[in-house]
Amino acid sequence: MNTSDAYKLIVNIENSINIDIYKFNQFNTWPIVRQILWIELISVKNKNIKEKNVFFKKISYDIFRRFFSFFNLVNPEKNNNSTKIFISRPVYLQKLPSGKYFDRIVDPIIEDSINNNELVDKYYLSLPKHPFNLSFKFRLLIKSKKNAKLIISNEVRKGLDRISKLTNIEYKILNKRYIKNLSLFVQWYEGSKKIFLNKSNLKEIYFPGWYFPDLMGVCAAASELKIRTVDVQHGKQGKFHAMYSGWNKIPKKGFDLMPDNFWCWGDVSCKHILKSSPNRKIHIPFVGGHTWISYYRNNLNPINRKPKDGIIHVLVTMQPPQGSNIERIPEFLINFLLSKNKNIFFTFRLHPNDSGGYEYCKRRLSYINDNFFSIDDGKSNLYDLFNIATHHITSYSSCCYEAEFFNVPSLIYGLEGKKIYADEINDGVFAYTDGSVNDLNKWLRKKRSDIKKVVNYIDI
Image (cartoon, rainbow, N blue to C red; front, side):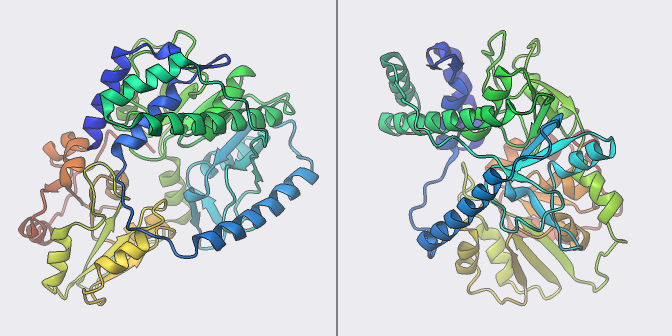
């Protein structure tokens, strides 16, 4: 199901049912149910993708994590007087020219906080690949190992059964996901609360991507202890993103599982979040700007490195299969590459969360002359690629907004992008194709001396 249809279905379901039946202890767990529906409805099931040596990778990672967790536990924290905590995921780390890894979401805010003489702590929810080579020291946030006794009421089971009928998602899938996510939520809630209780001066917690059981647990623990939580925007939070937009039944005191505030790139994201419930008193968005762009420009941006070799350098930012976007590399790009344009070079950049993407790209591009393309694993610095690129193509990645700051025009393709970026396409900010090689040819050859900027979406 495409994202806009999934969003509309979830909103309709929320409006037609009693969400207050979803309870665990004192918590309303509707956000857990809504996230399960969102993921299930937009996911593309592909059983043909297999990751090599996954068992041994998991064992090695688990051993390393256990060692690092033990190191955490036997070394007491230094900043029990910290006023702010920053929590993130390794996927947001970018390698700097110094060799250090910098978290593009939270590190710019951490640096500003330190410069203002604030005491801060940084945590990761999972172990980074290079844990001893990060720009700021961190600890692992550890969930509780206790297995909570989960008692799912008949009322909740009946509610899930009704949702199953409304969505055509099997009841046993919904029930299994709910129990699993609820269990994870409780473990992260208990683990987080234990840490927060030792920080008597803690006032605020910042993190990206609140809508998973781990950070829902963080939000619930913080809510109980009257600590403010802030979700920092990490990508497009558009009008069809069901975990940010379309919340119509927010309780007067809010959901404990949701953040108090949303740090947005610009006013457009704020308006999307508030559209369905403009009079809410909790879960309020505000414009914080895009701090990574500001940091990169002020500290890392080299003199314009656009190649002067006469070659058109096209960056394609891909997403894992989702909604109606089934192919990471659409057919029209394959057909274009087969035409062997010698003065055009493509870089296919994987989404950082796409574990099966590299093998897919190798198969998909196996019969294309490798003089015409390269595959980027998604771990390099995106902005360095924009400094080289002359054009950018994507289905629906929010990278199209960021590309504008590097004077790189974007071409959107597919039904997902057409709906998500309808306003920008209509305004001529982004070009669009339904999958035509002819459209691509014309767009690449078109001279654009003055690129129209997206002035409203990102503030820096």
